[in-house]
Length: 269
Image (cartoon, rainbow, N blue to C red):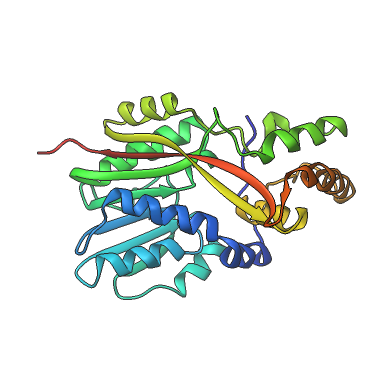
């Protein structure tokens, strides 16, 4: 499997993500709704990016509650810190190491579009750590890419890369996605009781291939097509532009993406 690099992020990519992360923010709000986050709760946002969703959750829990948001990318944490307030704290941190937090200290832990960046070992550790820091009966929620129903862009991109003789190793950066059955096994192995586990489909429209590539590059913190030279990336871009015209509608290039949504809880007292 390909290792996802945390070293490729730049201030420009972090800012692009902040201004272009509506998709993650909007499906994140659906995750928070499904978790039933409420006033007064203590919540941990793991992989918070630039903190848009964490700030939204801080409004929900109100001054009686609190939100801690962590992310491994310092440049994105810097942006998130600008959203910090009395009930929202932000720090650099990793999903698989929550040792900064005591056991049974949160009502809710969530990971929005995070798990597909972690390899299998990291996933197991991340879910085990989430179980440790949750109170008895506490809730875990995550959204993550679906391996059985990938984003429509992925097979198109694989076709283009194959035609150019530039296949990504292990189809990076998509090789850490899971199936619904695998997600269930991971949750149960970590000691969670699964409440809901389903694939949700979202439809996105983009003006052109450049918008799609900007979003994908910023969302992957520079990993997307990073194995290619600038010249090779331009060749991929031009071929993708041709292929994606077949998906154009009056609203723009229409692509579907699928995410596994999981809600689970720890055993009570």
